[in-house]
Length: 418
Image 1: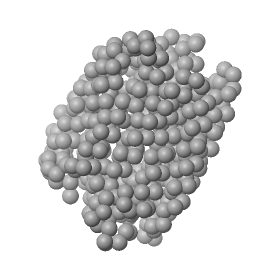
Image 2: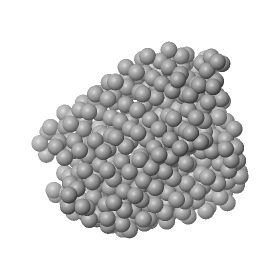
Image 3: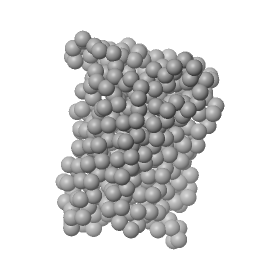
Image 4: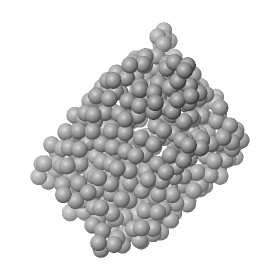
C-alpha cells in the first residue's frame, strides 16, 4: 500500500497506479480495435451469403460464444484473484490475449474463413476476459490510498473509455484497408500493456487464506446477496445492459439502416459510431474526476440508466448517422454515471480479502451481460428487425429502472459515496 504522504496526490502521481493506468489504456485500446474488426468481418462475410436479419444473428452469436466461457470461468477467476498475486494474473492474461490476437490475425488471412473459427477464438477471448476482470478490479485499491480511491476509479475509467474511443475509431480506419491491420495493432498494444504491468512494484498479492475454495464461493455470494446496496447496483446494470445494448447491431445499422453521408465511407461511419458511447463516457469520466459526486448517489445512478434507455430508443429510430452518433454519445455519458456510482460503492464497502470474488460476481452480472446482450440483440433483430430490437431494449431499460426503484429502495436512497 502506498505511503501515507501520498494521500493528497492525484492518482497518476503514484508510479504504480500510473503504470497500471497506462497498461489498461493500451490493453483496452488494442482489444477494442480487435472487437470492431471481428464484428465488421463477421457481418461482412455473412452478408455475402445471407440476408440482413440472418447476418445480424451471426454477429450476436459471437457475443454468445464469449458469454459461455465468461459464465463458466468468472467465479473460479474471482477465487484465484483472492488467493494469488493479482499482478501475475493480469500479466498472464495480457500475454494470452496477445497470442489470441495473433490467432485472429492468422485466421483473417484464410480465404472464405468459416464462422466456427471466429466463434472458437471468441470463446477463448471470453475465458481470458473472465480472469482479467476480477484481478484488474481488485488490484486498483492496492495501488492507491483509500482516501483517493473514488478519484482513482474515475481516472481509471478515463483510461478505459479513451481506449474504447480511439480503438474502434482507428479500427474503422484500418478496416477500410484491411482487417489484418486491426488485429496486428491489437497484438502490439497488448505487448506494451504486458511490459507496463511488470513495472508495478507494490505488493499485489492478497493476504494468505486457509478458507476452502467452496467456502470462499459461499462467502462471496452470501456477502452480495445480503448487501442490498451492492446487489441492487450490479443487478440494475445487468438488466439495463442486457436489454439496452445496441453495440452488436451497429454494423447492421451502418450498412442497412442509417443513411450515412456519401462523403463518409461505411467503415469510417462504423468506427465513429462504435466510438461514440466511449466519447460520451470519457467526457463524463473526466468531469467526475474533477468534480466527484458528493450527494444523491442513488438517484444519479437510476437517472443514468433511464437516460441510457431513452438514448437507445433515439438510436433505434434514427436514420441519420450524425443523430445516431449523438444518441450513442449521450448513452455513453449516462452509462458512465451508473458505472461510476456502482464501482465506487462496490470497491469502498467491500473488504480487501473479498474484492476478487465480489468483482468476479459483479463482472458476471455486468461484463458478461454485454456478450449475452449482444446475443439477445442478434436474436431480437432476427425476430423484430434491427430497429425493433433497439426499441425493445430501450423501453425494457426504462421498465427495469422503475421496477428497481421499488425493489431496491436502499440503493435509491444512497446519498454519499463513502
